[in-house]
Length: 68
Image (tube, rainbow, N blue to C red; front, top):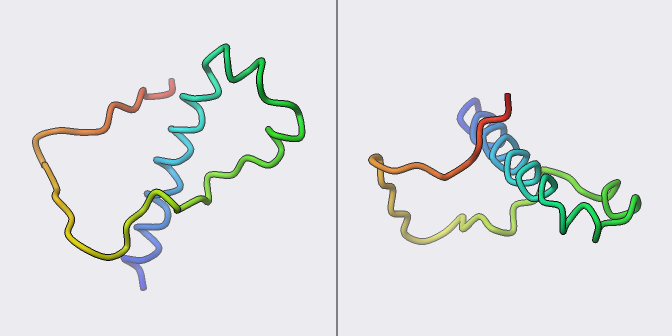
């Protein structure tokens, strides 16, 4: 059960970084309304493939900017 919680936390963290990256772009700041921003959540998982083959490259990483 601990592994599931760790996986969920990691997914929420990555999703939060992705949302922050997108929301920092000026074109999205102008396009989204207040209602759109309120509806955003890092709890989405439609981009996750829970079945099938996974290729893990330990020599590369996602290009996520570190928020200071």
